[in-house]
Amino acid sequence: MADLLQSETGLGPAEAEWLRLLVGDWQLISDLSFADLVLWVPSADRQHFVAVAHCRPTTGPTVHYDDVVGAVLERGRRPQVDTTFDEARSLRGRDPEWDDDVPVREETIPVVREGVVLGVLARHTNLATSRTPSRLELNYVKCADDLTRMIAAGDFPQTSAPTGPRRGAPRVGDGMLRLDAEGVVTYASPNALSAFHRAGLIGELVGANLAEIASSLAASHLPVDESLPLVVTGRAPWRTDLETEAATLAMRAIPLTRREDGPPVRVAALLLVRDVSELRRRERELMTKDATIREVHHRVKNNLQTVAALLRLQSRRITSEEGRSALQEAMRRVETIATVHETLSQGIDENVDFDQVLDRCLMMAAEVAVSNSERVRTVREGRFGELRQEDATALALVLTELVTNAVEHGFGSGRAGTVSVKVEHLGEDRLEVVVSDDGVGLPEDFQVGRSGLGTQIVRSLVAGELRGRMEFGPGDSGGTQVRLEVRVRRGTAPLGSVRTR
Image (cartoon, rainbow, N blue to C red; front, top):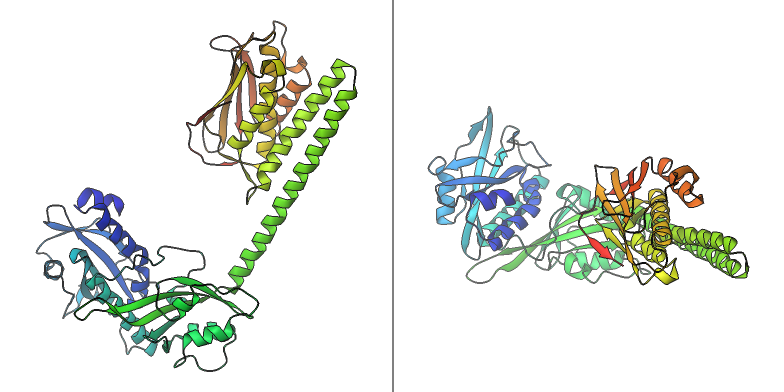
């Protein structure tokens, strides 16, 4: 729709946003009307109309089995659409039209914003299954007519109303109430009656004041949403939940207004109701589980940090330089794993923002050689994005080990330089990571399998946990370069961010 409005019409951003709000909420009108809706907008030269959006009802048969978005309607081909747009008045066809042997009644409504007609809303009703309408259908259509009158008057969509899909949002088929201007229920659909009875209502709903009913049903031990009074009286186009001892009802109000000679006056309200007890229960369970998982990660992080502290204390008591170095390396690896768990303890899922983890690990790695920490800097190029916990832990250990080796062995005797970690996304689940430095380079007798415990750990993690491969070699401008190609489970993330430590 946005592309069509920009390429085919001359509407500005404010007018396009108005149409976006209308389309975001017009499923309601389609369901109440039992009809297809097509939005026609004039071209920039006003010589034809373009169908920029199409909506089918969920409460009845559709008219257009093929999507009509993008169709072009020349002026003069359908005079009803031309007249509605030019004269800003709604029209209903006298005789039904036939579309693939299906009789269709068309009604056209001008879409008005601040007194200017932006387009035409065509309502197509399938008459093949016409019969004597039930009371529910009559009330549905009455509400739909009220909304189309508001569209023609420029009072709908309501800019403060919530539009678009939302988890647990009530729909027409879930339950509908019609209130008068005082908040008294004048009609309740069977599904709405059932929802309120499950919530604890005993007695009649029609003829009662909905605000009084909601007040009597609301659970006394739970806080009441401050928007509840405005929703149950139909005064504001908002959503809210009514929590009772027996159920939770999601409600959405749509004030119905009418203009005489002045500003719009609220004459009634449409209220959609849905029993979301099971949905809210599952959401609470998920929140509890999320909190438990975060607490577990937090405690694991604390335990790992305790282990790292014990290793640090033990290293200070060892006189052997080799033993002290081994304990410090073990301490660094434990702290790397603790960093991953700390990040997980702050999130709501099992994915890790690996860029945040890596930046902290790079800072720790650069501080391994105290004498060089002010002369050697670490740079990350590109973004890893979100990774699963198991992949994040393995990759963090690998990169920390490689960067630490570069700092320790590539920049001896106070030599300054840079260690960079560059990532490139090769596909949906593959990463290419290059760790390079401008240090002294690899020794002549270097062999991956015989170069120490750290390199053996890296080799094992890359081949096993990360399902990849690793190559050591000289850098393009001296120093050492390690190229990794690994498979990870991650969320997508944009590339291009560069951070320097």
